[in-house]
Image (cartoon, rainbow, N blue to C red):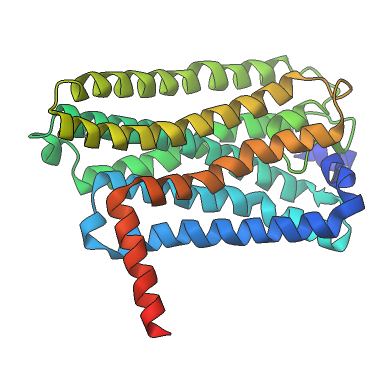
Amino acid sequence: MSNVSETSSIFVFLGVVEMERFRFLYATLGLVLYLNCLFFCFLIVIVVWTEESLHEPMYIFIGNLVLNGICISSTFMPKLISNLFFGSRTISVAGCFTQVFFIHGCAGVELHTFTLMAYDRYLAISQPLRYVTLMTKQKVWKLIIANWTLAYVMVFVPIIMTSYLPLCGVDINNILCDNMSLVKLACGDTSLNNIVGAVQTYLLQISFLLVIIYCYFRTFLVCLKFSKVASQKATRTLVTHLVAFSTFMVSSLFITLRYRISSGSISASTHTLITITGIIIPVMVNPLIYGIGTEALKIKILQKFHKVKELF
């Protein structure tokens, strides 16, 4: 990172600058939002972990998804809240690249987890008799480990490439650090960075998207062959997954479009709103969707609440 550190030891968040007028209000709202996110996500993780009846692939994948939500929010929310409360607008170079690494890594984990969940539902509904042997607990944990490993290996190379770019500015048009925002600050040739980014975004990620679409389409066709009761039950589970996945995709589209909009065409506050919408909504919505839409999980959560209530 020698080129970066020679340019400046800090970066400035223009998004935080835009929020300074009502910074205490935004900081308070951010803190409430973050604590609620931690509460609901940890609640689902704990319920899945402690309830033996939920030690099935679908619930383990749900637990992994909301655990990743904790990672995403914790990557930037504490820093954003701290900046707003204390009137700071900067982040160190090391802190910025750490944010970039985890933000992009968590995004990869999110997409890969949705892919695993789609594949899991396809096997469960289309191969019910062989499902127990096709998707064992050992295989589930191996897939989850591979998921996290692949996601972070994929982001390592482009981030290293970005760290060696000569940067001609310190103003990041965002509330957090992301790779494209740093690439836009470069005054050298960024064509190779753009090619690597395009390959990951449009080739690898679209490949996962196609797998998800294929699995859900085939699963839906199988559901049509079931009895009315069985079909409704299977379809309800599919709809829950599809709502969560659609929320993630729409939010990702928001962020992708933001990169295609020049900084001068819309205000920094609009860029900030797009980022917050794109990142926060899936993190907040996932535990609510699965906590309410998944019957067995909802029952166990309510039982936990009743046990806690009885103690008081």
